[in-house]
Amino acid sequence: MNEEIQNKLHREDMTLASIKKRGMALFIDEMLLSLILIFALSDSFFDAKTLEEMIILTNTFILEYMIMKIFYQAFFVMQYGASIGKIIMKIRVVEVSTLQTPNVMVALNRSFVRVVSEMLFYLGFLWGMIEPNRQAWHDKSAKTLVINA
Image (cartoon, rainbow, N blue to C red; front, top):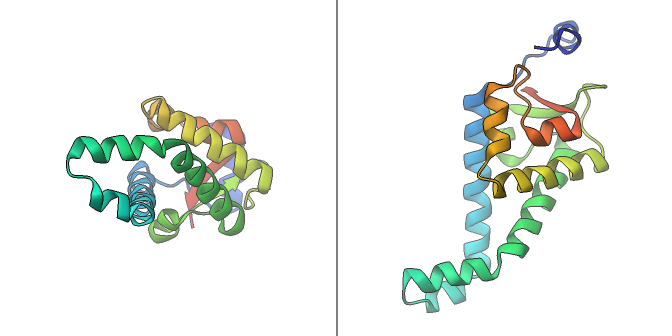
């Protein structure tokens, strides 16, 4: 771990969130957003007769879904320092420089790069598993850390 970050976290009595907690928060958020999408498109989903029709329907709204994910992540991280999944898992996002809740621009940057990482087969998330500060690409880009709340 970067010694400067380690010292800063130690001074403030903070610890990095585990990969397990982050993974569970990701799972909770993905399930929540998927349910919202299904609910929003419920009439169309009920009209679909085959799995193929459901997949085509989902793909039709992929851009809207990505935009929804960006705003969901940005809003909750900016407002509360954590998405609903992170709140449930008792972890939160902080800026490396201040150890405070990210501002609007940092939260938008983080959420946009997060969606890009998802589209690239979650490679940025895998990077966070091997990186000493557990910073995924979206954390590196936004200069944030995920800590235990």
